[in-house]
Amino acid sequence: MAKKKILLITTGGTIASQHSETGLVPQMNSNQLLSYAEGLTAHYDIDVEDLMSLDSSNIQAEEWQLMARAVYEKIGDYDGIIITHGTDTMAYSASMLTYMLKNLNKPVVITGSQVPIENLLSDARDNLYTAFAAVDSGINGVSIAFNRKIIRGCRAVKVRTMGFEAFESVNAKLNGEVYGDGLRKYVRDKEPAGPLELKDQLSTDVFLLKIIPSTKPEIFEMLRNMHYKGIVIEAFGMGGMHFVRRNLLDALEKLTKEGMSVVVCSQCLYDASDLSFYEVGTKLLDCGVISGRDMTTEAAVTKLMWALGQTEDPNEVRRIFNTDMAGEVHL
Image (cartoon, rainbow, N blue to C red):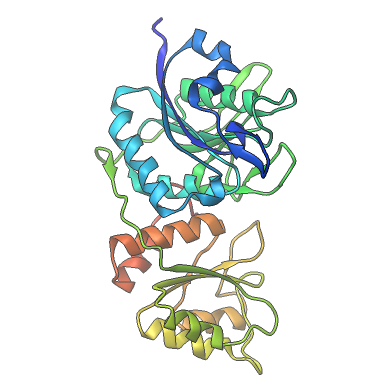
């Protein structure tokens, strides 16, 4: 049986980091990474591309576009693509690539590590093997491979800074998991609606605001004056914010009437927001906000950035949010 052909794209991150006078810095290239996982080259036909070498805190909109374009241009020549990436913004990148690569019918698996690969106690080798197994098993679409689990890219959240169980699949089942008998695939592949499309336009004029008790309504006017086009709000519980004494709702309604898109999610990690449940939520709906339902914050932020890159029409942005693009929301 012919070996599967896989492209390994590196972007930096802890997995490729080495010690310097100022702390850990990404320095290792793809061939150096593979030298620590020699078993992979015996089982797969691997090509490599060093796309960038960044701590993921420095990965932003421009890097998302570079990654999406690299995948779009190369995926036709491979059975799948693996991207090594820092963990801090991995969930944002995975979500954004999900939206940018429409009708993706091959695996694109993002992985990294909590400890540099050259450290004897590193989780990097295990994560790399899991990522390659996900490609081998044909888990299509964008996913994250970490701690022997395969998580849908737009459902992953980083929940630990040091522990090896760094990511969880929030409000969705795993795509797959490694057991003693191999990788168990839990998802059924769907036929794409059409050919692969690259839709990499986005807007960086999106702000994330976490509401706390006594937040001042003037914050919304400030965001308006800074020319933001969209806001994602992490509201309390099922979706509420105060309107007694410090009335946030009037200020918020002014923004939506002027055409700004505002998405409201919950500060709670699990379960869905439901703005119709309490008075504080129904008043938000009356202000013209969009419900984020059970989306992760990372998925909501990147979806709003992506949606505003496709259109500035608030009605069309609302339609996009009322559409499940790739399993990021249960409608």
